[in-house]
Length: 342
Ligand SMILES: C[S@@+](CC[C@H](N)C(=O)[O-])C[C@H]1O[C@@H](n2cnc3c(N)ncnc32)[C@H](O)[C@@H]1O
Image (cartoon, rainbow, N blue to C red; front, side, top):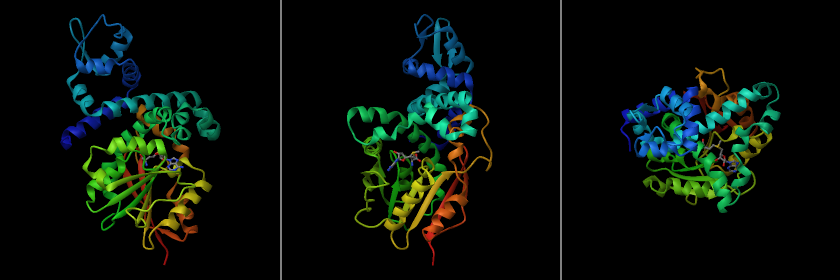
């Protein structure tokens, strides 16, 4: 594991690359052509067929590579960054390019006709949940890229958000839509007596199992493949969950689907249990990154709801929302904790 100072420097470099047009443009191409892997092995010649002058100039201007007399090499800080974050950077660069292209081509639609935008945007096709309903090789192949992207986001969000989840004394947590387990691992690391079950789609659970396999916390984590809208919700180590968590999950759904999923969770929860919703807040709360780094979040901006929206849904189920906690990540996250009334 990285020391906190190197991890912070890596996160800052990654963020500045993702905000910069030349960096996203050129890194995206370099990853696609396998050039980053080759540069990591050592310098490349200026005659290399992949070292196209425009591409290398952009990588140079973006401070990814430095010129040699006869070629190019990665800058030292890029070597350090790629040693720990190559998969994360690749996933984020590719998604930033996709989101920016959709927004620049269809920004008007995104704001004034969001449903049409969602139908047309490649960003939304990238999250092909319907391909995650089984674990055939082709389904896993289609599911892996977006799971990798969501995992990269969660790895960055979890250390900032996990301290605000009130889990002291909690031993059984169910995370619905917990993806590869990146967020759950951070919770398990902080709370040694905690056991977590993740319910997610079959291909996602399959990929998640390999993602967590090498981590000691995985002994306290179980994946349960299913559809949270219709399949029975799992117990956690044989008992009802004391907390059911929806992290960046509900915004994908219509209000009716959100209500139904929350109602099922409420029915399944231990009597004194809590529901926790953790979601990005609508734009307007907190600072905004205004560079290219905004694109991957702006593309979903019409889906982020106010705490009041969730308060009303939960009130209908007999739950009371405690004061929302706001945490600055890339955008502002709100952590909404709800308990049964009375
Ligand atoms: C936007 S991702 C968020 C993942 C994760 N909670 C995070 O914050 O990184 C939404 C997750 O919900 C899962 N999901 C979508 N539909 C689902 C369903 N019907 N039942 C269970 N999980 C579902 C997806 O597979 C995905 O992992």
